[in-house]
Length: 326
Image 1 (cartoon, rainbow, N blue to C red):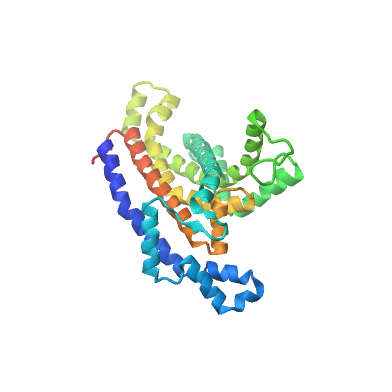
Image 2 (tube, rainbow, N blue to C red):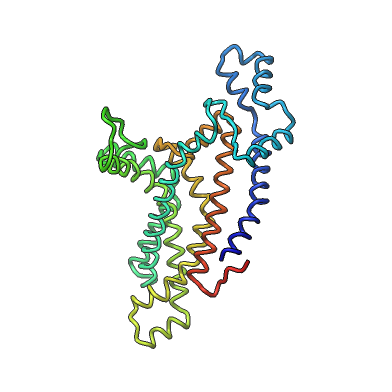
């Protein structure tokens, strides 16, 4: 396994470099830059071309594009992600402050989606065409077709405004006495429920439909008939023999949608004012903060590469026939 992991990590290096270059040139195509944004906020100074040119010189934006890319790659190799001139702090400081929030939201949503989606798909596959199967299919289609921002707003209206059961946004309650211990945990959990549920609903629908289809196919295989011939119960057959093979497509989908999960967090974090990487990326785009935005996109690339590596390892664990060859 170790040679396989080392080989994959080595192959990831040119991939990450290509992603950095692509993101850099893509952002260069966007109109305006940080100097334009800052100059426009100065009122009359915005019309002063000399002021804008001086800002570009101070930020290094007047250098040729290839030179800017070379400087950025050199800094990244030294784990220096630059300085956010908009916020006046290093980019690594901003990312460190927001990373925990996004990881908490994304991992909670992913666990919810896998657990609920796999359970619904497994239950629906036991009697294809039955009442429960039809209900799950209808709910999955509805959840998949509903926009994330609309789902989030409806949950806020229902549970935050009408019923007043849960907070409508933020990371924790602002109190005169700082919360700690159990009180802090409960408060964070209450703030997490709505955004995590909103982000998980889309993936619950996908995973439920995929698990259902995979289970129906797995339960028709020869080894299932052999297990029945041995006198094993249907529940034991489904969980021991069918589910393990049915999870392979689900694991593949989780790996492919790692980027979608991070992308969806941009919308959810904005709707719920959640202090995470997604909201920070939205602010970076609005402010034309190139260093910050490039670093967020780079971190997202690392996450996708790492998740796909984990998916390959889980694949080999679920199906020993799939070897991890270096």
